[in-house]
Length: 336
Image (tube, rainbow, N blue to C red; front, top):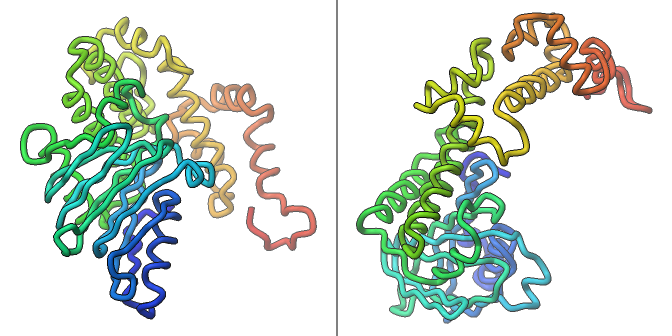
């Protein structure tokens, strides 16, 4: 997945090939879709995508057309995502699950890639530009039965949480290419949290339960990002995390009660994974193992060695030797 905008333009192709190119690019970047252009011979389009960790932001500008996603196309390929479109130029409409949204500049609508839908653009003859935030369903903190209520329903982007989300996505599209992969991953998590908050506000049917779930989800995300950012700090501990997030230690442990790992186990596993990755890097093969361990927050070599062996079934030194060993049939200069 790209970590900077990768731009694609139909103008570089012969006119007869542009529409087919656009259909293929959308199918590859977003999902398999059937298109019908008002003027295939005069069709023009541009596209780009920005990787945000598990999330992706796509940008497309194109001429008037209609599209639909049928059950057959869903069987052909389903990324299992929610996709949120923000119109930044022109107009468009989206229909799914009994809902239909007509959008102008600043308008947003959500659809589910696992369900049929129809859309159209340029009813006034003008080109349209849209940003599409692609959110894996597993990353959406709101229950699917609640999200279903607002599929293809207009989400205004001119006030309140909608305006904040629209502004964030627009700025991300404009400046995201200047960010590092780590920053882009964090921005992707922020985009999901903001989108979920905006959608929860639009649902508005469960004023107590949904925000509580969302607050817990957002807090877990923040703590996870905090751990990643401070993983090399030997003082990183559940007590420090609780204090920095204005929680009691008991509340912190309760927050992690239904998670796969406790907060202490999460810190340890991420430190060990970082050490394992560094031990397998050829360019770090001369770095002392104790220095690798210290970089990831382990200050006691014996504790580190014991934890590494428990996690991976061998001593750090043996793991490094195995990782540096050439693959069968490869020359001595082959990289791991």
